[in-house]
Image (tube, rainbow, N blue to C red; front, top):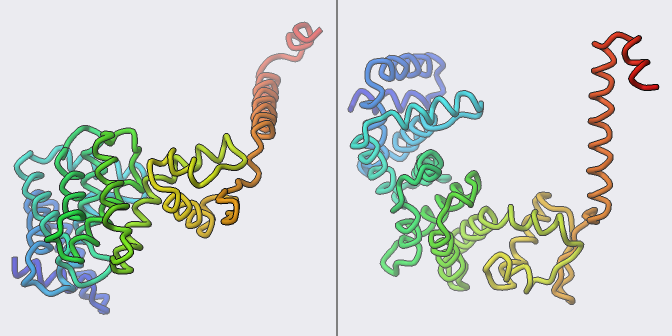
Length: 301
């Protein structure tokens, strides 16, 4: 373990030699004992006696073994996780979950590691206790601010990248209750409220986009009913989406309405028809390129 800690320190060193040495060590460790490598990383992240730098480096390395930007590589990483023995996966999950709210650096690593494991397991019905546990961390009066914050971040990361349809309705309600009733309270700290707002946005964004495709406008109340939140929180979600260019539209606070831009339903229908016609023309052109002209002339008479 001590050798791994020294190597993790070198991964963030400004020396190219240190970085090369750490990369070689990690690659050899993975080839020799991938399971042991993941368990050791989880242990380093979990142990609060380790330096914040080392814990952050362990979290980064663990995260890199769970996901990747490239879709093919990401699939391979996820399949490799699924192939691990169940006791190993359980051990790592307990460690990373136990690290929530204990880190100094931000953004903290544990919420991201929890989320990336969840993205692999939740679609298959695994780790069913995770979301209730995260919600409990937020709602429990005994939770520290750091634990509440980290748990909200984990919820946000999960909902940002997962299809909400794979999450049980009861779990979605637990998350919404934790976010709205506890994370967005007026007396809550600003960083917790920001994390709660981000999590609420992650849960609601796809629904807002769906509404924007079928409505030119909608009241905050009706949108709140659709999102299953109070009107003021529906307004907050839409405002942030517009501010971050995730949605084209504007708010009218006097009317308590949101107006969507360029979302005329008939125009969307016409655009779809034009796209289909264009696709048909492309198909015809491809046929003309491979079929003899004599045959084509006979067919089109």
